[in-house]
Length: 468
Image (cartoon, rainbow, N blue to C red; front, side, top):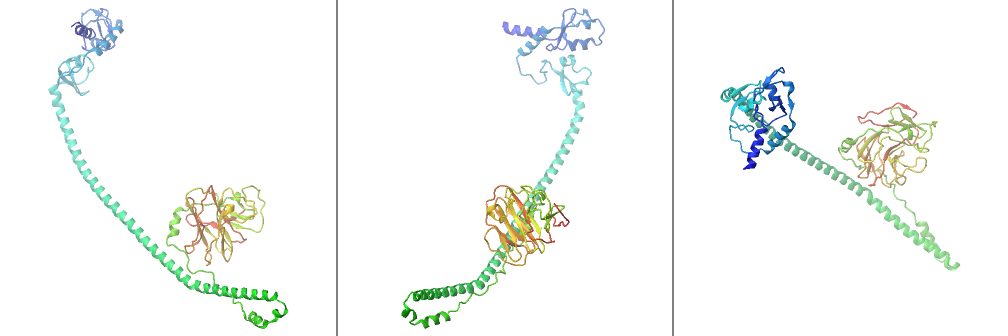
């Protein structure tokens, strides 16, 4: 029993006689009694004195209050030693006294010790029933407000659910629209594909049989010629009697053999590859391409805005550098191409010749070699009467376009050229594994007052020309 008594005595000695709670910042009066600093100050009020001690009534001056640090430590120890115990309802947890009042400022219940502690001095402290009566109206108004909020929340929830349902229906409807429209587009494209393939098949049936017959006829003539050549070579090896015997028949057969050359077949195809809506789709990848004057051949004349180029008749005095093309009449675009899809259009007008495409950033710009893939160039050239490319491929001849579209899909290794005039494919390079940085390439080839002009994304060309 000694331990509980010791703990109880320690707690009693560590308790302030004013607030009945453990000391907080305890101070000692002249008479030797201890109180919390805030408690004794509030008890005495004004700083003048002396005042009577709350315990022994001995006079003491407030200025003589001395801090009692050992007592503060003991109060902290007592606070820690106090065993936790369940607090009955209606009892103060700090002082174990009945809750008999309510602080309207802090909205908290108080016991008599809480009131004496001074923490609520000057506050609106009311008896429980009086405070309850005052708060009853406030709580009732709050309840009405919350009920109104609940009604509004239910209305808003219903509206939100209706909006959600409508959006779900709209999304589903639009999803069906997208799927339906693309399905219709696929059917239209399939029909166009079948139509073009049928036209090619008809053109094949019209053009190839006569060509096959011509090839077969020429083969027969070649066989007859080979036989006669062999016969004559053998006769020339014979003695005079053998050489002259029946020579009339041989010479008649030689004279009668007439070589029939093949019929001239026009190499212009009527059927061209034209996919409806393809150029409109490619224009989504249209970028702003401008010319790099530092790479231009000295014979080329560039516009101030870097969008037009033509080949002049005089060579300009420009500083030489590894970046400048010379002697090739070429100029590069400023924009590097190392990934993604890119599309640009060039107005070539009625020029007699031009070349367009891409090249590697590190190509040799001082060599006069041809612009072919082995040197890092992928270029389509128009040479007046036919197209030429760095890869062997056949391109149908037809009216040359006034505007050319160039499409590059870097990752897919795809480079193709289109006639913007009629939307048809001019040429597509075989799939190429591009690597490194590419640059757009432009070459007017021949001298002409008509420039090659890069169309702006909105389609407006630039036409003022100056030296680079």
